[in-house]
Length: 238
Image (cartoon, rainbow, N blue to C red; front, top):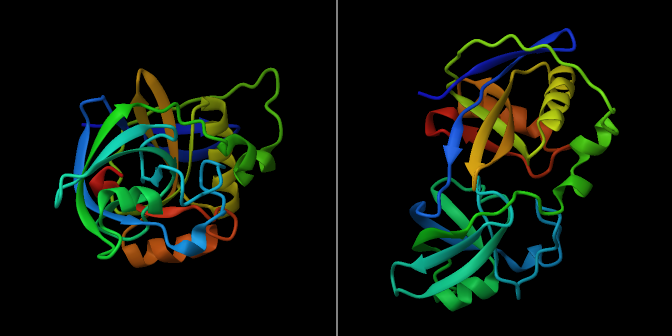
């Protein structure tokens, strides 16, 4: 059972739930892979890197940026090694978006989709270049030399849907961002904690909506400020 936390900070009550997700190097995942359309060439990914068809990269919903994974095409046994530097896919029932060159090596360019197996080769540190490009951090300004927060901890069990807007390493960024989001959107803020190579990475999710339709409405409000946001299901442990 995941640990759930209610956080009281700077006099504002908002809900944050912590769920531990471990990604050991033995972690595997099976599902459908797709690849980037030509229109994405040169666009900035969620990690801050520019997408290029020629690079061996991929988008995944939860694996930290910098994670190296082996992707095996289960239809022809072709394999490729790619680095996670983006978030997605944003289509249900797909687990990874590959660069075009990676898809070519796996041999599924013509059909567009294929069944794959993902294996972690080297856990990433989650950094990428996101700290320089994410508007949430620039909006908050520099961290002060000393900051104090008051925590009131209880257990909760979130369900329904939320909108994930970022992934970070520093706890202070998590607290300050959660406060900012709470004030801006008046929604509960949930944080999922991924543990990779003994390091923690915090995923910030806004809202706990009962239906996906409500989550879509919330996403439409958030996407203007956080263009890389996407819907997650608490029932699936996002």
